[in-house]
Each structure stands twice: as C-alpha cells, then as structure tokens.
Length: 355
Ligand code: ATP
Ligand code: MG
Figure 1 (cartoon, rainbow, N blue to C red):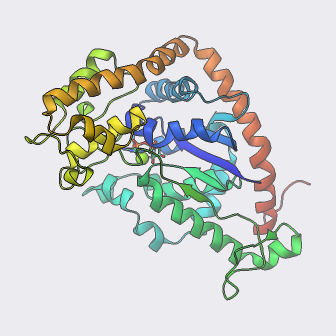
Figure 2 (figure 1 turned 135 degrees about the horizontal axis):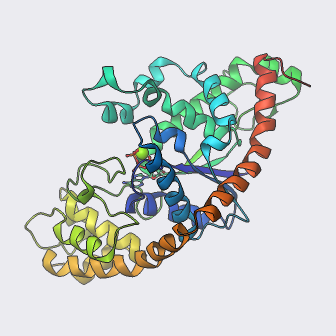
Figure 3 (figure 1 turned 90 degrees about the vertical axis):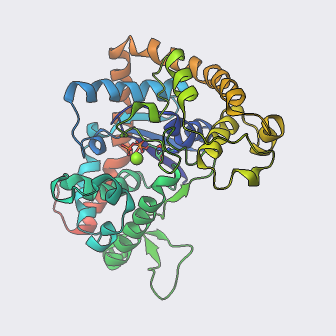
C-alpha cells in the first residue's frame, strides 16, 4: 500500500525553500496518497535549540502545514518526539547503517564545517533517525527537496541491508512481502521494508540563498536576509527581495542565458514556482529588463501568494491549545501505524517483548 512520509525541522524559520521544495508538494500528494507529515523536533536538537523557541517553532511549522492546506483530519500531522518508535527504530538503524555510509554525507560535512570535534553526535547519526522516520511507516514515497537526495539513498541502503541481514528470520516469522524488483544475486525473496522512493521534482527542488546563489536557502543560515520566512511581514519580504544579490546585467530572454548566473536563475526560478509558469515564459516577459523592474514584480507576486498563508499562520498561532491538540491526535494515529511495525522489527532482531 503506497504511503507518503515527510518531515520538516522546527529548527529555525519556515522559509520559501521549505514551502516550494516540500510543503506545496505535500499539499498536492494528499489527493492520491495516505500521508504522514511530521514536525521533526528530534532532528532539530542535533544543533542547540532554545527550549521555549523549540516549542514555538514546532507550533509554527504545524501552523504552516495547516495554512498551506494540509488536512489533519484526512492525513496525519504530528511532532516526532511524541512517537517513541522513531527513537527506538533509529537506534536499531544506528546498528545497521555503516560508518562509511555516514562519513559520505555532504550535509554533515557542510553543517559541521571545520568544527568536527565539537558538533553533537546526533548530527552525525541524524540520517539514521531519518531512515527510521520513513521506514516506521513503511512509507513508499518521500517528497523532499534536492538536498535530501543523499539521505534518501542512505534510507534505501539501510532498508536493503536490514532485509538482507535478517532475511531468514523475516521468512521464518512470515513477516515478509514479495520482493518484486529483486536482484537474484543479492536480494532475498521476501522483504520487510519497502525501498522508499524520493519525490524530488516540482517547480523548485532547490531554492537558493538570497545572499549567495551557490548556497541553498536554509533555516539554519545565520543571515536572516538570506531567506524569506513564512512569518515575515510584507515590508520585510519586500526589503529582502529588493536587497537580494544579483549581477549587473539585464535578464536574458532565453533560459540558456541564466547559465553561470546563479542569483538571476534563482530569482527567475522563484518567480516561476510561485506563478506556476515556465521560466521561458517569464523570460519572454522580462527578458532585457533590469532587476530594478523584475524585483518589484517578484515582490508583488510573492506577497500575493504568501500573505494568505502568513495571515492564516498568525491566526492559527493565536490558539496554541488547538495546535497542540492536532499534534497529539496525530501522534496517536501515527503510533497506531508505527508501533506494530516496531513490534515486528523487535521480533526480527530478537528482542523479547511482552506478548
Ligand atoms: P536546516 O538548514 O536546518 O537543515 P532546512 O532549511 O534544510 O533546515 P529542513 O527541515 O531540513 O529545512 O528541510 C525540510 C524540507 O525542506 C526538506 O524536504 C528539504 O529538502 C526541503 N528544503 C530545505 N531547504 C530547501 C531549499 N532551499 N529548496 C528546496 N527545498 C528545500
Ligand atoms: Mg535541511
């Protein structure tokens, strides 16, 4: 049975990259899948979080989901720490995934920088917790931005290694399902975990920083001017776009002309994603124009598309107990799916549990 899982960290501000790269896709997928959307607070604490701020941002991300159009009555919306299965399965995956796999994760290298000795150990094993998030629901499809591609591959490798390491036991217990796309030389006939497919496309799989076209827009970027937050007011959004870094040339009239111009490509990409038009069409309109003409149009479009969401988020944030109730009910529904999966994993691994 196909199922979607995805998560967003309450680690900073919900920003335009999260919105275009992830949340808008979540909204569309609701039509055709059963979906589990998680505010991953346990991932957030891989870097220091002020406790009151973490509570506030967990509610903010939840409000963002709801304001964008996610329906918590038809799908599941919850915060990760309320479902202990994630932590338990995460530990088991710490013992399945290999050091070498994690050593290759570019996000760790980027986030740790030169500070390797002094980052939390959680930051290093974070991808294993992410594998647990996905596989606890036996999710088959994972909508994410492009930056998560490598972590998704690791989740696939972890599922496969678990399936192979425990193949005999999975078969003995009768917990497997037919392995349809099996490579007869390595893969067992029955598998426990499906291979989760990343869903990466969409109009803006990688929104870049407004200050540096070579870095992705990120909630953990120290510079707030680098991103558009869904909580920014109209004036702030306008100012950030007006101040966004660009080169000195006019916009090209063909898409090829954006090559080697990362800042220009990013702003045109954002315009395309927000308007639902092709880049070519936008350059047809704005080709030959200076940024002094394009930026005000982008400001207007951004405010048009984002302010209804921002306003609704603010409204929802006024009633914290309503948000907490949604998270709590979501956690119950999530546990109902994930606990039986973990029970079977415990049987497979050889952990004794109460009958
Ligand atoms: P951090 O920098 O702390 O990792 P983040 O901005 O990457 O935060 P996450 O919570 O890690 O936010 O990511 C949530 C989702 O948003 C993921 O699916 C991720 O791929 C997507 N995403 C994050 N940044 C971008 C971006 N700049 N463009 C497109 N998608 C993005
Ligand atoms: Mg991230």
